[in-house]
Length: 616
Image (cartoon, rainbow, N blue to C red; front, side, top):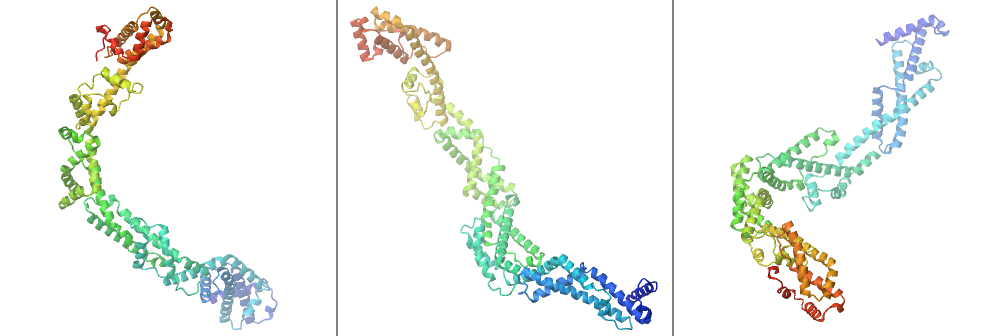
């Protein structure tokens, strides 16, 4: 077939000669064989010129061939090709030679084909001579264009393959530590096995991993040398990644939502976690086998002891979490209000303090509840009935679970406890201090007035204890609830403030009377009216003023306070001191001095009319 194509081409060329399209006069005088030879050489020359024009863009087959030859040359002399820049220069010349060889082979193919169908001898020089005088220049330019456009890609492909081959060799030469070796190292990294290993702790393995590369003694290209230097770091990262993945798997497995309800003992939970971890490891191993060759050679380690040792502890934690979750979110307790009332009212001294009383109430309800709670838990979780004693033991012996249940009981008690305690406190107040709702008596208000509570009427327990019976008895009673005492103090504060309002009005009345009656007092003194008579006049006037106010405000205090009377006496004496002594009768002065000396207003008041006496 090829010969027929060639013959047709030569025939067409002959026709061109006959019609003047190819002008070579020597052909006219040559024989038919010479003519056919010449025509065949010219056809071959044209084909080589066409081939040369396409030389800068070879086909995929040529590219593969070039890359394979580059790989072969690099592999044969790694020392020469160690540095990538030097290697690229060597490959530049090598590719040029390969392309030149390709050109030569193409020329030989053309000549061989011509010789097979021509009786005359044809040589390469015959074809080259017909390609024109500039064929070498054209070939050189085409070669340069090829190298400029194709060399980088071809070199990278060959270089990458060399790197992969050498890395595979390195991977086969540098072993990963065995599980036993690595597991021992990891276990020694952290003193506290409950904490996760940090990057800082992992870095302690680096020097140990570097010792695995000490036996590498063959020459490698620079890129692979870099890989060797960092292979220990890469192995460290891989080991840490496997640790992190195992840790992540353990955390995801040990999420409470992933634990079936019926698994309520830590032994069953531990078995589940162990099975799922083993399943995870197997899946990782299968996935690794399907990876690229380099990745597939990396071992997938079993669960490290530093993590597997946690499984039992985690199972115990999950066991408690499940039961705590049931107690907190699911358990319904029905503690009747009457039961709370009965316990407190039967022995109030035991529950006098709210906080201590609450603790005692919790404990008193705790014991009879736990057995029923264990039954409910086992039933709700659809676990085996044999686990009821096991759960009961958790409820009574496990501190964290006991605290959760106590908290739950406290929440249930809080629904009615305040109401119950308030009710009992009211009953105690009515029993032991039935007058606590009544206004404070005159003496109590006077007492708090003289101890400085007038400007800060805020009583505390120690203030209330100053009052005599029956309040002293109340505060000495051990069976009185805190709420009873608090309510009493609160009520007494209200009563005290109301009493002080009445007292304040009376004292202001004295000040107003004094400012208005100075001139009148001066006249009384000149008229030799006694201080007792002046006192009576003042007291009568202020008393009448107060009675109107008391009636208007419904004040329970219908008489003047002793503090008001003292202030009247003191104001009169102050006014006497401001008046010239010349106006004062010696007898009156003696009486006044005596009054001033003794300060016994109560004795003078005995002389006041019986209806005006203040009864306490």
